[in-house]
Length: 213
Figure 1: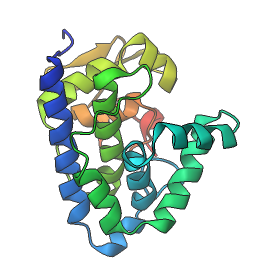
Figure 2: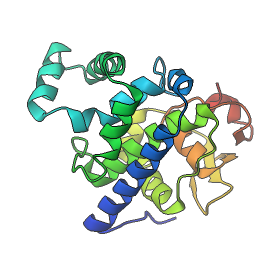
Figure 3: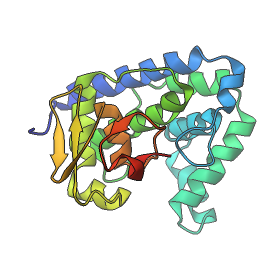
Figure 4: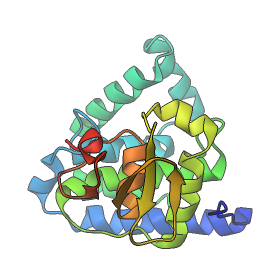
């Protein structure tokens, strides 16, 4: 399938819609659900929400200071900040940080608007899949994100071994790669590309155990 594309204003509206939807999900969670482990190893829903909203809550200068403290290691910085902020901010405050910033212009360095949408969609699924909410990301958003994560730069970043596997969505006209079919919903295949280990039963085919927790 050819990559999906939108104008700048169109994708900004799409990002805002995704953040608005995710804020609605977070706002509806009972308090105990915030301690549910997510697909991001070591993070509960509260740490994940802190990470998603970090770009809205941190100035460029503060981000630079935090990165310097971590010796330039973004992963270590993100983990430390997520844990600290999750302890300091209530679920209501974290939800508001997302709901109040649906139109925030943040973009990941070098990632553009597609990268911003990818960040929100993937991390949203990191929470909703283990929560068992069953939220379906709208197909238009998925197409943009799938095109983004299967680009050469993103594939190098995630480093997921897709050799000999053809990803084939059973709910969207989308496939990627060649080899033994791995089938499932498009958003679950998206998570597999991003290196997540999914709950059993979401993916099907001989390669499924490679991508299942």
